[in-house]
Length: 382
Ligand code: PMP
Ligand code: GLN
Image 1 (cartoon, rainbow, N blue to C red):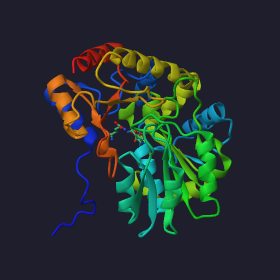
Image 2: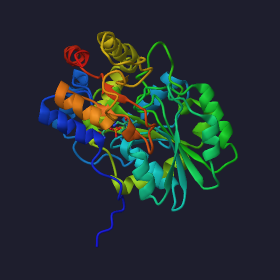
Image 3: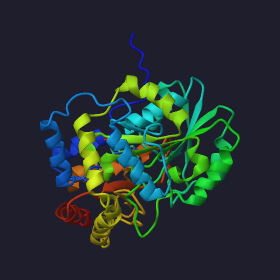
Image 4: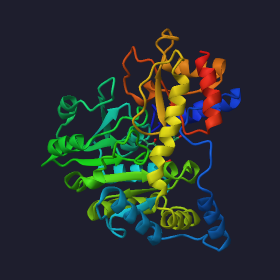
């Protein structure tokens, strides 16, 4: 008889809601991806490299030129030097990086702490390594870390703590003070950190991203993960990277070389070219996405949804208590899609156990102005 290794896992909510949007013709604000293209020069570079024959395996660790561009970007963004050869690895998506980091750290019986609501790939990765996730809810309404609860959740079996800032689905940000507290909490213990920073450049209202890359003490036990998909509007390229101290990188690469061996070669050539030619792209992202967030929120101001503007990411949470308090969020997301033509993501699916009275859906605003206007019109009619 087949006994599943992941008995509680089904098809992800992102796949299900995007599928429902397709079937119903709804505007898809569910799964997080832009409805516009990445920079033209970047796309042209891929075509050029494909035509020039950059179509065979690249180095397992990633194309050297791209790793160097990532190192240069880290210096510009965070003022720290991370070594392109021994600390930076290019992966086929942040998801693969997270998976490999977990496999490198977790043994059967180990515990990993996740802060709920959390991204859906963390727990299956931990379970496949034979570990168990301990879920610590973030404190509402701001999705802040409850330090006492986190401290109470640490046991002698704790091996890993996941961070995610800017945070999917809430957009909440960790501060430097948060990182100091975490460093203090795990000092002297055999605990490592996976810091999921895929939305590192999507941060608004003049705030600065507090990266674990720039926190020397935490960095020494961390895997810091990012995604070119978010930063360059090309989620379908599934190309990301992970930065970790040399000893951790060496362990991660032992796994990465057998999960995938290497990322896609022409994409890495193109990204390296584009990053060299257009380093200002990342600096322009906050204003670019803040304008979208503000347009969308302004358009929703007279709706029956209530919200506070997302501090980061390209997701906006919206509370629908005043509309259909009778519906749980999964039913609400489906109802919105079918009856009102806008697909959304329910927030409870990011929890082990969501608060019973939570009435939140997540809306992706990485969309063209015209899409945001059409979606907002429909949402204002709800
Ligand atoms: N972490 C978070 C928080 C995400 O939202 C995503 C988006 N898919 C990922 C990781 C995965 O990124 P990638 O598509 O590069 O694998
Ligand atoms: N990260 C994307 C989101 O949160 C989804 C990616 C996926 O479909 N796996 O919407």
